[in-house]
Amino acid sequence: MATSPIGHTHIKYDYQILPIGAEVLNRNIQELHKRVKQELRDDGIKEENNDIHVYVDMKYLLQINAVRFEIPLKEEYTEEDAENLAHWFDTAYSDMYGEGSGYPEAGRCIVSYMVKGEGVVYNFEPREVEFEDQDSSHAMKEQRDAFFKGDGFIPTNVYEFDKLNPWNKLRGPAVIEAEETTIVVPPGFSASLDGLKNVEIEQD
Image: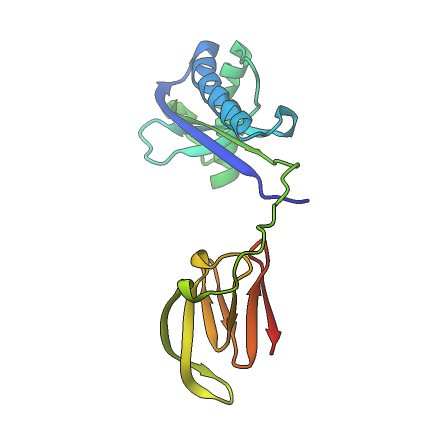
């Protein structure tokens, strides 16, 4: 069963002018990495299902806007990694603004660090709610005129999807309003919710 990934992102601002040492990279990134890993673990995601990326925001001195680029994820960064920051940034800057657009003579600085992690809980199984009641009147928010082809403007019940319960049933003409969509039930049709709140529309 496919499910949407769960994500966590943490950012830390620590303005530093290059060159820096490996201890600066490790101090900033390891803290963020640890927090993201723990939050994914708390969500029930196995470590082998984690997808974690590290980004650094840098700019040339006296510039306003920074450029974000990805660096390798490591448990511990070396002095060579710290030295490579300048090259990684120059490359990212050229990729964004064109060859020769950089100005390394002005100096470079780090603005912030970001660690972004995602994971999927593959053993998620939705559970149906047992049948209770088909009455949907508690979820009706108002009645207003709505236009239907062949009927013109007619009084139409409007329901809040969030207040509907599994197994509720309602007859058209009706409109079900949800945060992300609107469901129209024409005259002569009925809408039924199953135990997972899926909406099925059938002709009467």
